[in-house]
Length: 393
Ligand code: NAD
Image (cartoon, rainbow, N blue to C red):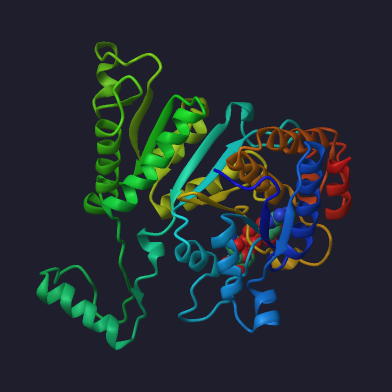
């Protein structure tokens, strides 16, 4: 990504624990930039609670425009107020600026407690489609006229008259497009090529949801077959596992294969080292990346970033954890490592590496926040601010 030498980076600290981890992460990221001879001009922008305070709006235009203009941004978590018809601000932001892929790397940091036998084998990157699927928000509430109209249409016009029970019903639509599937899979394959990874696994439940998740996989395979030379990308046939010996797989090619989503959750835990890059529809990606995150230390350290064409919005996997908010106790690592992804995308490799090394060194010395301290023998519990200062040091 081409960015100015001293870029302006919009930052949303976020709601709940965002107020703790936002400033802490900002300090660490700035220190890493400075230590590698770079400067960041931060631009505080507001959304959620801070948006309501300053602008009387959840997602002010100034915030959306700043992220749109500067193309590189980072955000903490935003609370989704509970109430009928309220759409998540996070989803709204991703859709408004067409951040169509959500990328979550899952890798082991030395010293982090894990329930796995060999956590160091975990080194996966999930690409989750970010705009479609049941998250598109096309659904109707039980008891409304709209839902009854949809029911009537589905039962009478489309002939599914024996599927839905009488009485109240909620209905949602699961749109999966060729356009959305292909651009996501393309991003995953390009990432695998650029980062020397050997495999991209498409994850869907196509045996049941043939025309949505099944199509996702078929369209993804088309990208692998039609858009890259054979020696660069090898589209594995379904029969690969029975006939492996007879198929000539080009030595350095990225293999693109597909797995069923339910089985994948099992394989991910039993044969961690067999997977590298995963690409999947929205809901599968949400579940699978949280489960993967739990295996390498949990939400406190799981980073992520949303990518569009030539833009990135880094954001951790976790939410605003209201019970922990304002107590200087939450773990800023997830947001810090999300910043590392942002630096990586900006081409600031040495800054990105420094962030990871400093985090790893701090954790492996036993200095951690409360969420990890409970699990590490002899661990020393630090508050959010002190932990961040230790990383900076
Ligand atoms: P959550 O991720 O906020 O918290 C779940 C639990 O995980 C917390 O109670 C806490 O014990 C732990 N945890 C999470 N992050 C931590 C950290 N950095 N350090 C230490 N412990 C941490 O999930 P939730 O409680 O389901 O959601 C709370 C709110 O956040 C909801 O309004 C939800 O909509 C929102 N949310 C926002 C995002 C986002 O901004 N992208 C993502 C998920 C949830």
